[in-house]
Amino acid sequence: MKKIIGFIFIGVLLSTFIPTAYSYTNPELDQRIYEAKIVFAEAMATPDQSIPEELLAKCKAIAVYPSVLKGAFLIGGRYGKGVVLKRDENTHAWGPVAFSTIGGGSFGLQIGGEATDLILVIMNERGLKSLLSDNFTLGVDGSVAAGPVGRSSEASTDLKLKAGIISYSRSRGLFGGLALDGAVLTQDNNSNSSYYSRPLTSKDILLGHAVEIQPSSRELVDALNEYSTRWSKREKSVDENMSASTPADYEGEIEAIHNDENEILVLDTTPLEKRPKDAAAEKRIKVDAATLATLKVGDHVKVDLSTPGKDNKAHKVIKV
Image 1 (cartoon, helix red, strand yellow):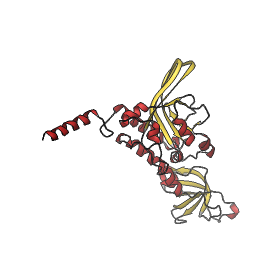
Image 2 (cartoon, one colour):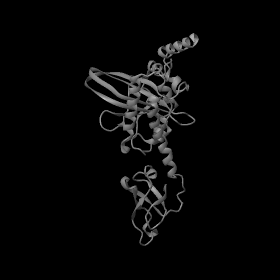
Image 3 (tube, rainbow, N blue to C red):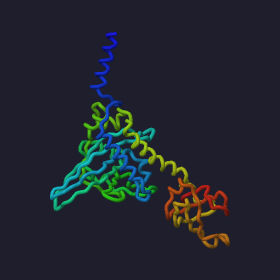
Image 4 (tube, rainbow, N blue to C red):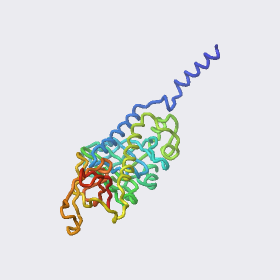
């Protein structure tokens, strides 16, 4: 009985004085993750001004800094705290969070202050290596670019290849691309160690598979997974590699998109002499929501109608 009591006493002492990854909580770090989730969700909430889902589907990592404070009175500076997450090379799922800070200074005739939400999308290995280096300064080598906006905007190949990091920010109102120069990124390894209850660096977390996703970061990870997979699902719904000679029920250029009704207005571009006598010059065509999200005004499309001449509902839409 004495031995049992002794073991129970030792167990109580261990659970009290030795925190574990499951029992340890840090409200400040949990709040930082929660705010990062809110910032990301708000960045994606307005389709016309969101981060293109193609970038999220193809990027290596992402860094989110809520409320980066910038102030100046002759001498200016900025400072903020954020989180970094990386996608798994094999599963493409997002992994656990690492912590990071951003800072910087400026000189000159300036006065005032503001808080800015900042998102950095890391597109390639060079960008990820820079992000994980000690005191990396954005913009010193031209590897940071202002990002395009719009849920289904097509990011140019040149942008994806040359820009290691694509940046977005919001001081007020909508998010927009920002060419951010001079800010210094530093890995917050003290916060990493505090959050996971053992000494860890950002490289351990993001590259070394040293930890599991913690409960307080699950919502952020789930949100990233959701938006990262949307583009690949929509891409499959539109075959962009179909031959230009593929027959179709209707072919033309998209003049307008009616999101509320899941319809596109297509202007017939077939030469007049080749059109049927009573063919309409334009046609409103119903498409499913997933396909609609991949299309934009100006796209040239071929449409395979499920029931030609009746409800004008598309069976398949092909970009050409």
